[in-house]
Image (cartoon, rainbow over the protein chains, first blue to last red):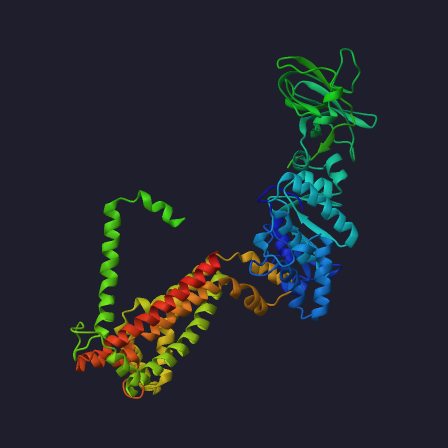
Length: 325
Length: 264
């Protein structure tokens, strides 16, 4: 589940976990209604933001907690806790208290505790947000490895779009308490249906205009005095209707003089930034306002300069027709 | 670490602080001096130190009976107050609504209403219930007036308790009872212990209620001291006071120790 802060993703997770009752509607797991079940009867593992480890219990006792409250025999507890700590590579620290561990280690304990009782589902509420970038990448890899190994469904809440793209099988994008769009990372990034997702999951430029005519496999629309070609998505939009086309910065190119392109747009460089692997250039265009372009640095062709005039081009299939709001 | 800031404090502030400490503490120390007097009335020792009144205290039936009665009543009423007060504080904390603020306020009523008014009310009430001059009567009255101390200290401890720990416990399959026993109580233990100590001290040296609703069969230690001062100026009183102070101070030290161990 991905969304900006305040979009309701944690509230939705709390409903799945059973801490918040929905005003309307129901929650089902594998076809069974679970809306009426209290959290302790749902058998879902949960990793909280800030981990919520029990500060008065050792690592071992934290992980053993779900088994103890289920009154499992002692030998089984020993064995399962060991296995769970093994899984997160924390066997040597089992007698320490949570506050004696680093953030990454605490995270692993929280994970072991949520997995030790073989839950039906694992819920994670921004589990990596408190960690630094490098550790986060490491734990992301580890979570993916665990996910493959256990074959258990994870519901992962994050506001970090890169995390969502790299870790998910399916992404649900939320905004203002609503589900905006859902799909695989590839679908959502490559073929977003809404302007919100096009701009939130990566960045997009938007070109707006009115449909002028239909052509083979596409249509022509005009905006700000310029004409553009666009491939159709599902059906041809009515002539005269308004359209919004999202353009990924990396799908734009700078045209060499005299080069052919479906669409062309001239403008002046307002600012540029170098990121090692790429240039990001902001181009002021008279017909479409500021347009941002990302060019692979090794293949940029030009070295940008502020005030330089240039012509941008993209193919009719590069843009994606999206719904506003 | 705390001491490092003292260097900046002016001499004025420091002497004022010491003056106030002396004002608060010195009168108490007089009691210790009086308790070892060698004379026959409440006075400072004249020609030597004598422990006769301590012998008198621990050798006399009535004084020892009163100490035992006070101790039993304090223990029983503390137990009731701690359980009721802790559960009340946790309940209010879990609800977290306007209504719970009101309940918390109501719980503090016994220490906001003047004790004498409260004692009168209980007296009237206890007549009908035939609880006058019984252990149960005094234990209940002390327990009710002890609850506010527990509610305050436990509520304070709960304010620092991460509610996600409760959610974590529930999500891991613990019932509400198990969560209370295994997660919430252990984490607010310092608050519970402080409340326990305050409730105990409250009952241990409570006089007004003891005057109103007990008198013959139940004769607590403060009550006997009160009578002793009214009837004779027996220095045994000073010995009792010294013992009481010692008990209270050691309880407070225990409280400080529990807190510091938790804090480290």
